[in-house]
Image (tube, rainbow, N blue to C red; front, side):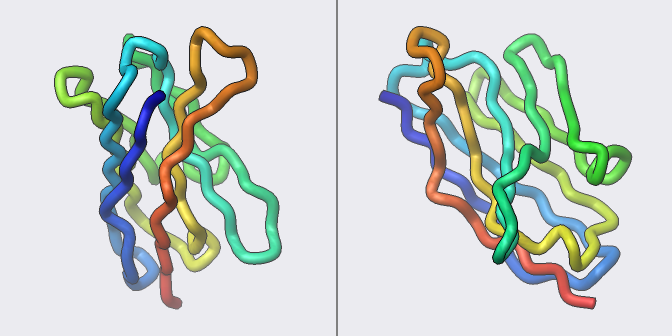
Length: 118
């Protein structure tokens, strides 16, 4: 099993910045890509960004140019730097990591609230 623990959420004004962190522990060998998803009230969960151990990244169109995902493989930690935040970025952000040995099995963190005020 893999445990994912997020930190760094909070309340920020529009235009501000936040950095989220997600630390992985446990059976680290069973994960490769890690990423962030978010879910706003009344909406479906959506992909925000992903990154592989090799550093290949993927972003949702809505955050391109504003958010940057990175990782420190030595610390088994992935980061999400969020700049130029907008009220529509308000959501619970959750860290995700697919298990490479079990198809369609994903590990999730507990989620961290990000609230952007206008």
